[in-house]
Image 1 (cartoon, helix red, strand yellow):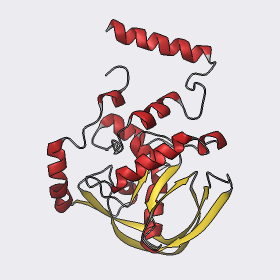
Image 2: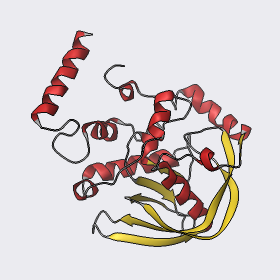
Image 3: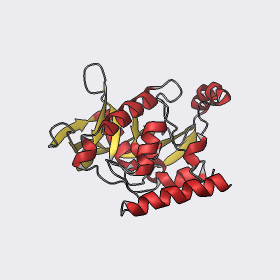
Length: 231
């Protein structure tokens, strides 16, 4: 108990000395740097069934600064987000920064519309326009495991993001299922879950069965350090 209070006191003194309630020197906030550096290559994904996780998933995200865009920390975060979404225990087609505890406008999307279907990371991303008809189709979410919903989405979107190398805005027009992935992940950045938009939501037993062995191995356990200094 005394050690915990001593740690909190030291951190508070450091923050006051720097004149900022949240940020020490360097890109990203203290907690963000902790999450990026301390997370395993496969990061813990927040889930709605955990109360504190659900609050984070409802938060609104903000842009990265030029310093943050060019930092090694963004590169590390991108690598870990990609490893997480592509891991066997997750097996997703997209992931957003708030799902791994960062309130930043960063998503990773599998570009099913490109040769080789690569995963790509998009910082400071937004939808500029919705295109085409509204289509309805099934969606799931790594943060709501074992469930599916039928969700109305635009058939196409125009998206814009910042290139970390040039710091210039880049735009792309995307159609089909890849456009659905973009809409789903960008919703996360505004605290919106697919269940908010879904016509119906239902249990997907096949997904639960696939997840069960990883549950038994503790693959989804939340690291103690993610609970903060009161853990």
